[in-house]
Image (cartoon, one colour):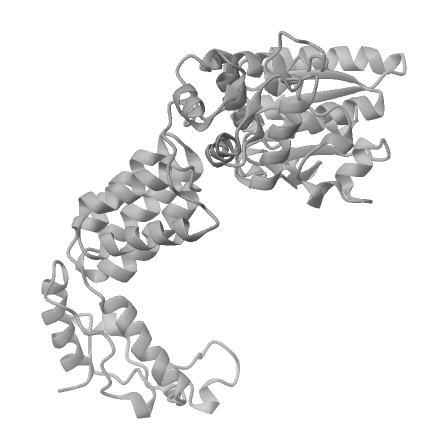
Length: 452
């Protein structure tokens, strides 16, 4: 299903119609179906992308060619071909195709389809059961599938955008082949669009789509073929003269074209400006560059990774909560997705940009790494070595170690670093934010631990 980030006003009905029609798998000549449904590949050769799963001898190709019998969990982003592959599998094996959506089906519907499949099996007819968004099924609903899958009453093909290791019950997971689909590349999306423009099932060559318009649709698709075809269809429907240019696409999908190439200079320039704005505490500039990345369809996981790095690199101990905010934003991206996750990314951006800054974390690590590279890695003091094995005491290991919690203050004098690094300071706190409190404490701790 579309995540709505690039859906235009007035085109949601098209997307909703597709979602309803997807379960029916209409024939390619259904001229009233949405473009994304009409252009659904009818043969394996028409499938674009996912070559890592469709190569000669691969498990999925064997299944589609009718020489495999394992149930399958297709895991991947929206618009990458999960429903298509399920349909092709059904056609290739000559099995009846039944589709359920976890959004609307319950245990009763699941058992009804299984009973139907059992009756067909008695007459030698097999059934492929496709379940979309299986991660939304409860444990009870998933458990209802187990016997039918194990006894091969149905060949289950389940699709999910969530990691099945966390969203599918273990017994069902162990009985299925898990195949991960990847977002389509920009070249893949361009191929899908060009085919739709020329194919009789699609626009049948009746529209002239400019290169700039095509590039813009590719950018906003975010690797989602269905989203790209929905945008193309909405733009074509708005054309009065048979020409689709970038302005028409912008108006149709309600997104301005943003000068941003995820594989070129603009990508690196914008992310560089974003990072430097965070470091420089210019919250407004940081929000501007964040908005440019989101509007251009940048992978939100990439933005989340940069925010987590910046939280430690630029803020660090001046505000330890910044890292927690960034990690939480990354979890929202993973668990909720776009467009809602853009709010969490914005919150993390504001937090990091406005937080007190300290470069002490990377500096302290850099200093310690420099000494290690320089060969300053002497023997671990004997009293700190592992003593949990026979003969350790005879070697002097763990002998004389003083347990800090036995001391009223929880800290006592004891040597921790190798001999040649005694007295070396790596962490140098600033007087910014929380480090104003940490600095005096570090000084006091060093004095006690070093016995001064």
